[in-house]
Length: 105
Image (tube, rainbow, N blue to C red; front, side):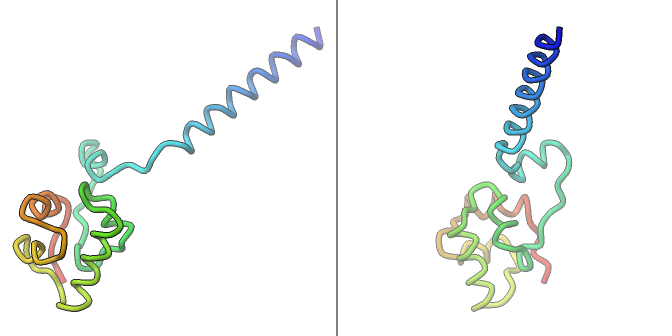
């Protein structure tokens, strides 16, 4: 009887461990996934961290850095059109980004 209880305990422990590992392995939600879940507020583009910017679809670490460099050199980005002046961001990507940000200073 002790052997059966011990075996069941080991199996339950293994299952619980697998669940914890699976939860930790899930990638961070993108803003698109959060928006679909109704949990997103727009990010202030001019004050966002690089990490926040990379959550926006189409913005990786290099484009996030380019946005921050542009702001540092030219001041706040005030519109979707001005966002296209950032290296690597065209009209299509600027339109996508504009859905997730506001341009307040």
